[in-house]
Length: 377
Figure 1 (tube, rainbow, N blue to C red):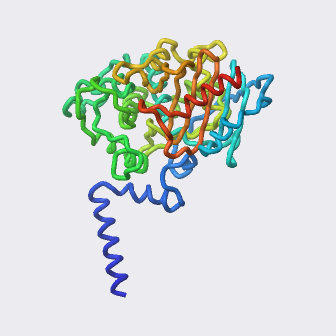
Figure 2 (cartoon, one colour):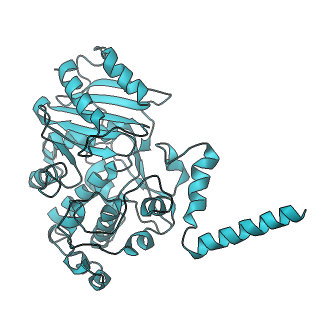
Figure 3 (cartoon, one colour):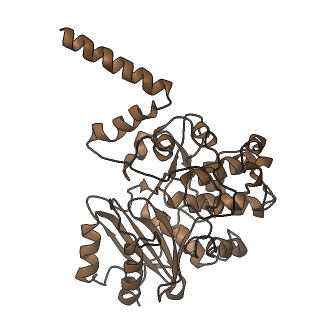
């Protein structure tokens, strides 16, 4: 009996210390992972978080290519998809659906977590807000939205472009496995503003490329302040409805209703593909401009600081013989644009320990691009 009392006292003291030192979010993380038999965030965990709806308008289904699902994938491609725990694999060629395949119980209606593919969507919202005059330009100072940043070392020099290009100088360790670091606090915590604005800057913005979820979250705060509406409703108005998306989507939010702009748009593979097709079409859909071509060119142009592997929200590979750029999310969420082949490739799934090159780009992306170019030539 005494042992149980001591154990209970220990648990209460430990819990109190977690709350006092700002680690209460760990209880949420444990309940959403370990207590569900998982070791980390998952593509299906959207239902575990509060969210804002990204409403669709009149749905428009993909037109099918004459060869739709008539081409059998080679064994090496099929094996790669199976072995990487793929949920979906879809290819659009010349604006038409040519291949669509689902695995492990997923189907065309399954909504999965975009993870960091949402970073490119957030940059899209920045471009649209600039186009509409709601934001002056991408070089606007972040402190014009949040003056308190001026008091932080290096903070007064921060611009929206620095945030979009991952050159903010923010003190943020982009670690997905350590539960005591910022990513876990932002993902499982209740207050995104506290999680991001509590961080300082370790160097002058614009000096170095460092991929950080915190930078995109700060960018999201500035865009929302400029719009004076939820980012989900703006995304719906400017992209989801005009593109004829087939389903509503959900964007995970914190307790205040602020979207996790570095992450967590839950949608289906066909609708993710429509985002990719928009870029293949240089910002147009059915002849109507949805996003400025000039801004798209900025998004897909690699920066010198990133050694040309990252633009604004997009990863880029111009080293490969078949050049491509792509949305990229944790565990292998990809929307890949291959302009010279007029092709969009989408892959979703749960590829833990995703192999990457020494430049931070997933090996699987290059493999799928090169193989799809041969298969669907």
